[in-house]
Length: 165
Image: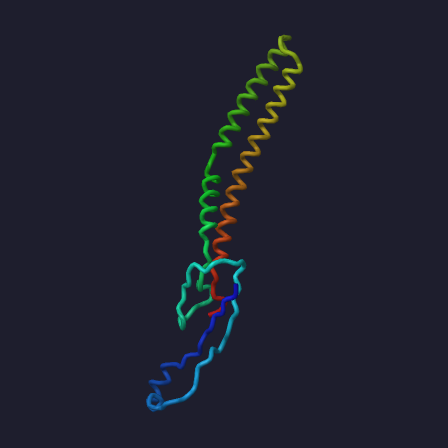
């Protein structure tokens, strides 16, 4: 999507105040922009809002227009919920605690000669599996938090800003 920003050279009002005879003269001609700037959006999209009107002054960094962000905003809400959720971590912690407790009890029973070594080995594997699931849940939460930041950056990129004063 290509947007053209035109900036016109305006006749300073201070000169009119200094030279009143300029007010009474008629001049035939036309005004051309003194600078033409092509602006490109980082991605295609529908224009949702235009922040400037024709002839308005803009400064570097001022928003000129915004592309539609409705899909990104919906994705942001989902990502924020996922980033705030602790449910998977709570479940993984509970599984880890139960499997660790079972392994501890079976290890005691094995030392007393009442538990088979294969049962203890299976319980140990369950602890390792539960520990891995807990770490995975914690990593997924971190990824969800990064996803929130990523979507916010994408939304910001959909605002086209003036590159000049």
